[in-house]
Image (cartoon, rainbow, N blue to C red; front, top):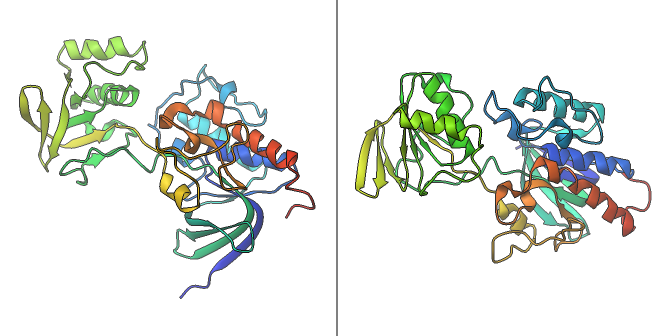
Length: 337
């Protein structure tokens, strides 16, 4: 049996995404030295983006602490973003325990919090802290289809690159940007692509410069679009689609469920955070503190109606609110650990 490793900290941050890193830098400014717990690599969510993705935002809207984000073009690419946030973490000497999964967070009887975690090797780690910032994202929690066969290896909720799908039958589920972008890239490499969407039309937020290109592919028969339809079942070599005219069975090699993601509320609930009837955690917009004193939120985990209502552009400032609140309440008096 492995001995448990224990760390005593003044403050810990769970999640090393852009918003978690931004919070760490803001807390450094008020004299704290937070440690960031990350179950994968730094900015793991961005590393899961499509290989050739280009951000909607301009570089200055993604910057942390005024560190310039220089890019070759007007919009940053995935690779440029990975390089930028990695550089910020190194330049600001952010203390990060990567590949360490947070498993349980609870209030300590003696005050503060206890975080039970586990390294990738299986080694247990215990963190004790006065304050905690939860900055977890949502990429590990996809919105499931809830149909038979969804657990087959050919089904994924992530699209990275098109090449593996050459000369295959691919069904893409969804009607927003991720589905449309994936369909165009996969069709270009010679796949037979069908897009299945339950709506009457594609999502209103589809990029206006991409929509005409996609619809031209549909009109030419290069991409098949099935609206007012949904997946009914997935088999090894086929897929059943429920349409207004009944079940349609298509030959199928791969399914890309571009159905979005959601934050994990269970972790917060177990820590004592009240989950409102509407499904989001209770916290103060001005301070980012939850109903549990000393427990704060940063980034997409604080979203309310939709997971994508908080972006890097806005979530990067949550750490500033947290730092200001800790200063204003006098909670960090004394020499920080």
